[in-house]
Length: 280
Ligand SMILES: NC(=O)c1ccc[n+]([C@@H]2O[C@H](COP(=O)([O-])OP(=O)(O)OC[C@H]3O[C@@H](n4cnc5c(N)ncnc54)[C@H](OP(=O)(O)O)[C@@H]3O)[C@@H](O)[C@H]2O)c1
Figure 1 (cartoon, helix red, strand yellow):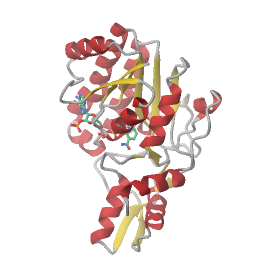
Figure 2 (cartoon, helix red, strand yellow):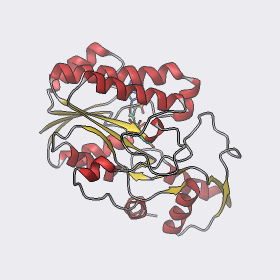
Figure 3 (cartoon, rainbow, N blue to C red):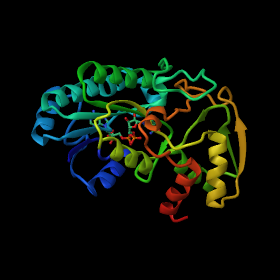
Figure 4 (cartoon, rainbow, N blue to C red):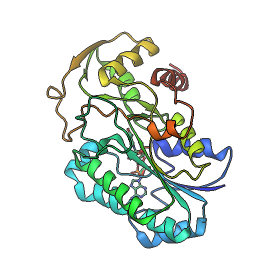
C-alpha cells in the first residue's frame, strides 16, 4: 500500500516510518515540509502523495504548555486535524488519527471502553477530542487510535527523564495516584500496521497490557535498569502541574480484541525491549 505519515519526526512518527517501510511504500512529511495548520498546502500535499492510508501522528503534545497557549494547541490539534481530514476526503484515502487517553476525565475505576463517554479535563485533551470529532464528521474511512503514556527511542519521555534524574538525584518523587498503561511506540506502530490491513474502521484503544501508577512505572524502570535510587511516592496535589490530568486512564483495548487481534504484550516486557536500545 501507499502510506503517508504526517509527523514523521515525532517520537511515534519515527517508529511508524521504520515499521511500515518494511512492507509498504511510505512517504513522510515533517513540520518543515508541511504545517498542517495550512489547509491549502495540506490538501495539495496529500493529493500529490495520493496515499491509500494517511497516518496523522503530528500534534501539539505539550500538555502543560497547552494551558498557557490554548490557541496554538487548538490550531494544531483541532484545526490541523480538520485540515488533514479534509485532505483525506479530497484524496479519497483512509485516515489514522492518533488520539489520547486524555479525552477521558479519569473518574472511572475500571478501564475505559471505546464507547464510554468522553470528558476531557484540560486544553490538550479538549483540542485532541475536537480533532476526533472533525475526523468523525468529515470522513467515512477512519481509524481513531487512542493511546496513552507513550515512550520511545526518538523523543523525550518518562523513562528517559527518570534515568536522567537518577544521575543527579539520590531521591526522586513520583506521583502515585495517577494510573495508566505505559505504551511503547514500537508496539503501537506494529498494531497500527495490522489495523490498516482491514477496512474495519472506527475507534480503537491501543496500549500495552496491564497498568500501573507513574510511581510503580518508575520502580520498574529502575529495577530493569539496575539503578539504585530512592523513590518517594507523592500525590498529584503534592506535585502540582499547570494541566489537570485524569487520575485513572486505563484504556480497554476492546475493539482490538473484538476484531480478533492478538493481545498486546505487557508494558514490562515492552519496557525491557526499549531498555535494550538504551544500552545501559
Ligand atoms: N506522548 C504521549 O505520551 C502520547 C500519549 C497519547 C497520545 N499521544 C498522541 O500520539 C501522537 C504522537 O505523539 P508523540 O509523542 O510522538 O509526539 P511528538 O514527539 O511531540 O511529535 C509530534 C510531531 O508533530 C509535529 N508538529 C507539531 N505541530 C505541527 C504542525 N502544525 N504541522 C505539522 N507537524 C507538527 C512536531 O514537530 P515539532 O517537534 O517541531 O513541534 C512533532 O514532530 C500525537 O497525536 C499525540 O497527541 C501521545
